[in-house]
Length: 54
Image 1 (tube, rainbow, N blue to C red):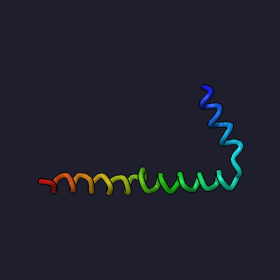
Image 2: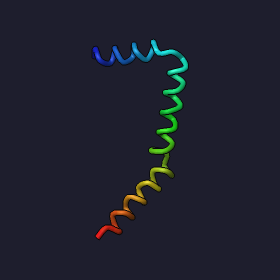
Image 3: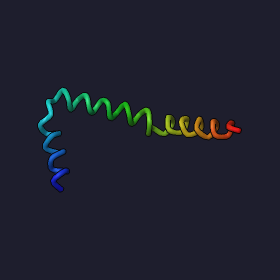
């Protein structure tokens, strides 16, 4: 519980510009890693590379 409180306190004390940058980074990460079309393409590339290995 103490760790959670510490992380929330650190977040609340961050300057607004830092919070904005973190939000933008999180959104970009989500779109590149978890958006369904991107995730599907990544998954298919992984499957294809596994099938091509001897």
